[in-house]
View 1 (cartoon, one colour):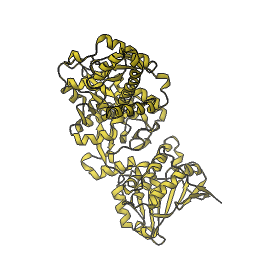
View 2 (cartoon, helix red, strand yellow; view 1 turned 30 degrees about the vertical axis):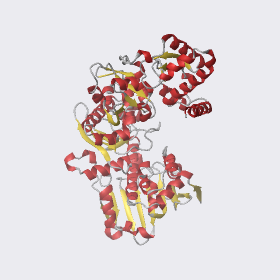
View 3 (cartoon, rainbow, N blue to C red; view 1 turned 180 degrees about the vertical axis):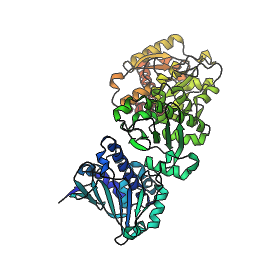
View 4 (cartoon, helix red, strand yellow; view 1 turned 90 degrees about the vertical axis):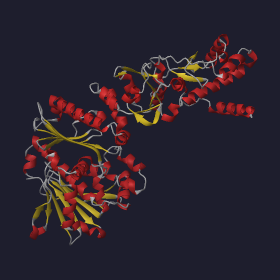
Length: 614
């Protein structure tokens, strides 16, 4: 008796994309299934460290590929951990990996998107590219019941109790008529050697009663080999194996650390950003081995969060084989390994940083996450800042380093200055930067949310203060004709009236020398939250508790301010002046990227003033 179940909606969408799209590398399905089988063996091997009886019945772990040309079928079997009924439903009936459903909802119907399907952790479904039907027979280690799972990839699947003498999983692919080549033993050997030669378990080709069995992979841990013996292609395929990605690694780092603690690392930085890089539940991508025995892929202590995009393997002979999750968290050796890994990654990034075009491939993909390290990693803060890149007022199109910024500073400049916002172009035209432009002082244009936080902890860099432009103490005085300035007594009356009109909107109204072209601008007082950070918190529905009034700065040399200071003296024109003050305040909000409270009033008055001018 079988149970019929429907795929979750997102699985149906994904299967439709996979099955009905022209896919240039269909043979990838075999790599994905072999990788899954390898993972199943890894898990059983680890579980057997604590419960040796689990592995006794399995014998030597291996992955067996059995082609059946007569019936046009292909079977991939392993004697790993296996699955029970709940596992089959959770792993194969839904997209369990967080964020994959979002990808499916947003995916575009074109070949370039489909080519990246492997990076979303759904490799099993690639079998349906070549299959009319897929059957799974599986039994979980330590359990007596076996289960079968059957699906044509359309609508749903069936689950039923079954018979299986040993633990593990057998996947039988009923090949489409046009995919008979996947029963060709020569072709299968080629695919396995190309994509899965490094798998640490024998991959056995079952040639039938007459042919016997043939191991077709070398089966050695790639990270344990001498670097001189490894080809670029082997590194690339191992990266595909550990990352489940289809892109090529931007950086490969293979090393052996010796000394108080010995360990080997084979690490990769991808060339493209994974879809879930900024999802809260994303974990780091390193697998921990002890003497080539897989221990865990959930050792968060091996990498800091800002390097969560790094993939690869770490193998140490100095950790005990039976180390538990709790022991890993407390083991001082893990902290030393982490320190060594981070140091090597940062050192390698520094080497690559000299090639601008090459380094920007990394920075565009991972720079936002990497900058989190300035905030989080006290020990390496300055080194991470050195490796970071920024747009600036003088370099809006080509990103620069802090060292390049400092090298271009004049001797008189007192600090490294920055401004935060949502868009580089909008920031570059912020009225608050007018005096900086006039004085030739560069300003970093920071547009990532994390910029609001690391700038609070990196208060100096290489002995130079790092300050928001509102904290600038430069001499911004510019030669101007005093006759063009509003009279002091008139200006005082105007700013008082502006504060009255804008009561509840701004904390105060002051005059400033920092504006050269704009009549007004908004700023913050020292110690206040920046306008950009307040906007970010408001967008995350957290702003109410932190809302604060801003300071409206007035340019006493601007003709509009001069004229306003004159008409405000006449009580008969105060109403007109009040309208203009509200419009000036709205202009200041717009310049900051803020929404105005009464768009209808602004549009109406702007139209009337334009009509009067023509």
